[in-house]
Length: 415
Image (cartoon, rainbow, N blue to C red; front, side, top):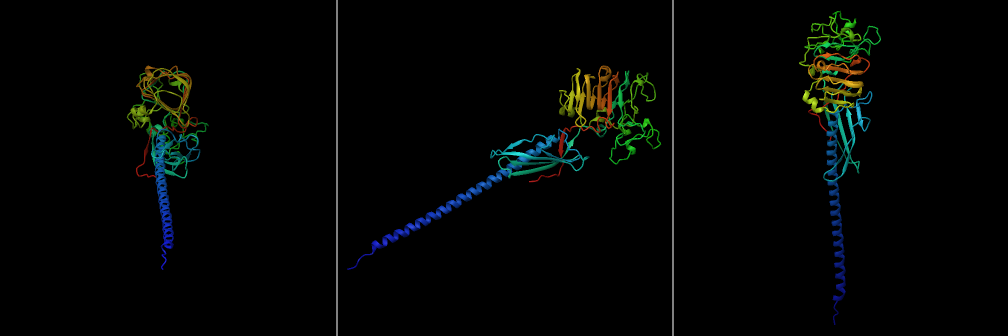
């Protein structure tokens, strides 16, 4: 009689099946875990790449902001240095940028302005952005720019007084200090008594006026009230007193001639003037461009102002030796009220506006820079002082604010 073994084989088959199922489950779990891990890794990589792109875009935004700021402000270079690393005193407020895809915030962690030398017209702007929650994510962009100035070469170093007309009926003793005057009375141009245009430490031919042709700086007539470069002045400008007959002659006694103290300077009329107008003498931008960049509300803050009102304006201290004002009065010759100090340029645009509206009644006014009048001046006040740029007292240069910043073609950014 045979005994069947089916019962003993069934449990064995069940065990094998169970083992196979468990192994398949483990394999599937491993595959699922690996797939999930790969997905998470890919998602993380994609997120990091997206954040890196956003950080780069934020750096680009910071660069655009830095360039725009340099087109409206003078970079406050630290003393003796050619690099300004923001944050620092005088730096612009750096914006925070938010990514549109992730909502991540990015800080402009570094905004650096640098220049090859103190006399360079070109500035490198470098912007670095980092993640607000993860500073390891960053981007950097840079470009070279050239700020667009307002002044011509002549306007950067203008005489204290420039007229396109005559000076009549001067009263009292207004003072005009030339761009160079003999501060210590020794008859020599000392280091703080002349303007070294090319920085070579020598009084070159283009830096003084040899009125007697002897090749030496040897008398007061060569301490020009206008400037040390003779071609800066001329054309139709009558830069001296008008005689009784209305003509201009620097050697003839005219009305009010004895009232103006020139401090070792002389008034000149140079016919070799290269510009078409007194505006073109000072500015390399049009009147429309100046007006578009200027504020129409006058204040004592440094900057550009276009004043259309003919009413009196308040006294005070306008601008500073390092950050001046440029004020254009469109009509007439408006008067300041009270004691007033101006660092920069006062420009009266209306032809003979200061003749029909005389300057008497100005009060105590001191200008460190230049007074430009489109036409003549009548009755200059007794208490006016105008100190030329580089006279050793007020300003060594007119560091005017730019009105734009142009990128240099061919410069590139770091990515």
